[in-house]
Image 1 (cartoon, rainbow, N blue to C red):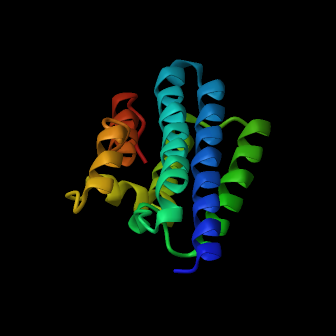
Image 2: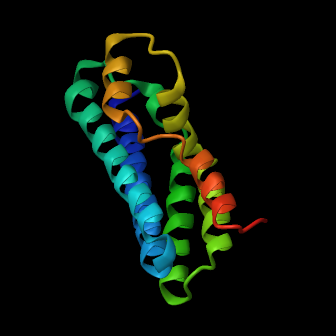
Length: 158
């Protein structure tokens, strides 16, 4: 993969993590009874962005960037970013219901950028670089499962 293409994929991936973090912050502010849950996910998404940034800064120039940490389609990442930005704007104007927040979050966690990150963190580390990032990520994973469990715990079903 060319350096410029990798740089663009990394930048869009970082942007996606930060955009999802902002959306979860919006949910935290809009749903006071669920504030702690959404705030925790907000913090974790910011942490994901920081880990991708660290991977870029530490390994990309040396050709050791863990490529499966991020999606390989710039178009998919740009579409996801545009969607999350639109949703954040929408929910800043009209707050979501608890069900709507959960449904939107589950759908986003299943999109390209978020799925690549999740799969990377769940796979068996094939080298020392992968292992370092998995250890640093620790418990900041399983967002989709946790959102589904949260939805069930608050008694809101699709």
